[in-house]
Image (cartoon, rainbow, N blue to C red; front, side):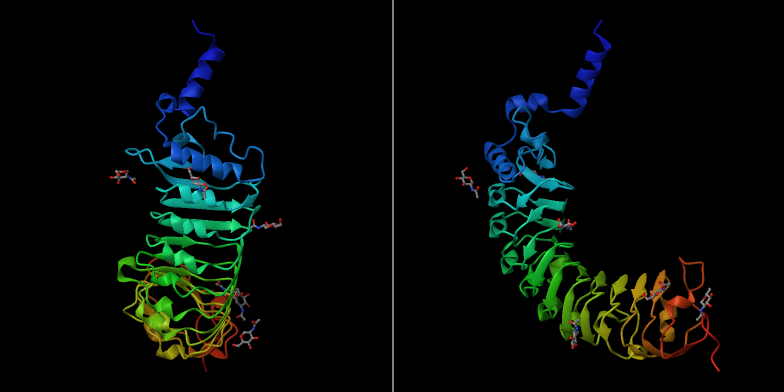
Length: 339
Ligand SMILES: *[C@@H]1O[C@H](CO)[C@@H](O)[C@H](O)[C@H]1NC(C)=O
Ligand SMILES: *[C@@H]1O[C@H](CO)[C@@H](O)[C@H](O)[C@H]1NC(C)=O
Ligand SMILES: *[C@@H]1O[C@H](CO)[C@@H](O)[C@H](O)[C@H]1NC(C)=O
Ligand SMILES: *[C@@H]1O[C@H](CO)[C@@H](O)[C@H](O)[C@H]1NC(C)=O
Ligand SMILES: *[C@@H]1O[C@H](CO)[C@@H](O)[C@H](O)[C@H]1NC(C)=O
Ligand SMILES: *[C@@H]1O[C@H](CO)[C@@H](O)[C@H](O)[C@H]1NC(C)=O
């Protein structure tokens, strides 16, 4: 009988290295292995990925995923990694079959977004978030024609948003939140391609300014968050009975428009317009938004009676008064009665 400890070792080895026989057969493409090794060696750490050992097939390395049929590397997902230090290496361009790149929660990842990313023709999901990369959001990202999902949130990116990005044919989600972006929202954000479906937009927590382009009214966004910027003018472009959005957050900006003229989509689930200069009344039609679960219109210049007869399907509690406080002259439940 095998000693128990040895048995446990064998079982653990089989569990954690299911493709050991494949490693011997060398399934991983040599070009991919070379590109991954160059990626690893580009960082200043001596051995950032201990499982990236030539003994194992590179398809089994931490964060690496291969296509089952072709054994080419299709996904590289490094998240989180506290000690990994350096810049995004250009050797990534040699992962020619990569579709999914995620570098998430790597505080010591620095430098700029490298042009080599444009050489990865099949790249669809690009996430570089919660890192210390800085510099601009480069125009050349619009050369990655298959890009469907772009998340560059929680970095130190600055400068303006390149107008070319929203016109990518398959882009359906763009998250540039929590950076230091300046300038206006480009007019091209009104020209997402039809192939993209209902795009999700998050530009919150930046320093964007200026009026919203009227072209935005053409787009059926699934969700919009432009909160905590310095945007101004009319944000009614996001609203309308025939729109699709379930979540709209335009809070903490300088928007100024007449809410009485707005109609709300029935699909609305979250609505935060607090901390702006929005005036007029809250339209009675908002009570038709049966999915509404969160509402905040506080700190604006609204007036008149808060509508009654809400048809809320997924919220049992009544609205709190803090959803309506600090307006010019709103009255009625849950505030003081109107005179
Ligand atoms: C894997 O590659 C095969 C052959 O190229 C392709 O048909 C299949 O869709 C790929 N699978 C994935 C998950 O990319
Ligand atoms: C890509 O690989 C080729 C050969 O395998 C090598 O010469 C080249 O330097 C690599 N490119 C990068 C950017 O690492
Ligand atoms: C960026 O670096 C600073 C200083 O090292 C660190 O405190 C911060 O958490 C880092 N940011 C991110 C998003 O990791
Ligand atoms: C916000 O925008 C207004 C113009 O709309 C400008 O006067 C003001 O300086 C901006 N504030 C900040 C903090 O950028
Ligand atoms: C808001 O409601 C809380 C408790 O629900 C109450 O204590 C508070 O006085 C109310 N504030 C105003 C201004 O009506
Ligand atoms: C509404 O927003 C104001 C301002 O940010 C906040 O103080 C209040 O707690 C919020 N109320 C709700 C119900 O979210």
